[in-house]
Image (cartoon, rainbow, N blue to C red; front, top):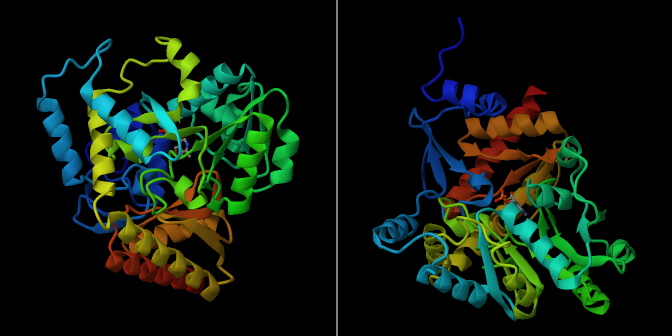
Length: 412
Ligand SMILES: Cc1ncc(COP(=O)(O)O)c(C=O)c1O
């Protein structure tokens, strides 16, 4: 006789992914009745957790933000003709807002349905604009799982099962300007980077490195594509992480939290000069649901909430407290923890090994906090709570972490 499972789990396991269910079960998270509100989730038995997984970056505004729900319901009530080939006012308004929040002269946008699709589009756009095929990206980067985005991702474990990937993409050491300089050739169309890497543990780009990359790209006539799918929309305490670096890329790639944690969305925002050939390539560069009214309305509501007085400042303060608390924890437990790094609400901590990281994730869950190991580095635990996490909740996360580590150390 097998163990009886709550309704939904058996079907999910059979028809979606048994491996996913097994993974969640190891962490005690295979309950199909989770509810979410703000920075917390509650399981089917009523136990509440502070969510430091944050939907891997989609729930910057917290779970079920009332302004997002209200905006989407209102949008559904509008009798707009929703399909192609019509122009919708809501897409035009979002494109205008994306131009407003983007740095420098980035003013044209392409809307699609996921971050990966946006990365693929940025690669196509760079090839089209320069007539060159090459892309230089970074080791340990993550840009998504479609064929183009996966080819650009620098994590061997993700890439290997799907080889051969797109030719012409090289990977260089992150935060190493010399390595990058050597890799850029006459065949390079673009350099593609994240400002905070997170999939193999969190690494923040050095300011000098980023400034050097910008200069190199200008000198060599190569486009700079910055992937802010994870770091965008407040994650690092600024609307966009580019602001921390005073950086104006040629193309900015967005997604995740732009959909308010509800609607799938992706976007490429770029300079007008790059749009000439690209917009002529319509309809080759369009997708059926790209720029749909619900996604655009969610994007507008997200920008609105993030722009409310004090919202980003509070997120910045609470993010700084989280970072400081994680660093203090590392210094108290040098045998169990190897380091912590982050920017705003995107933080990570390196443990002694994969077993320890998974054990700590389980221990945290028992203490009422959800955090998961990085998929590209099982030694690393990622903490990326919703921006709406309160100071009290941050302190509760740090207390839970301390207890979980002490218990783990005692059991060794
Ligand atoms: C930096 C980065 N780029 C791209 C992607 C891919 O986005 P999506 O999952 O929406 O395809 C992700 C997703 O985790 C990401 O973190």
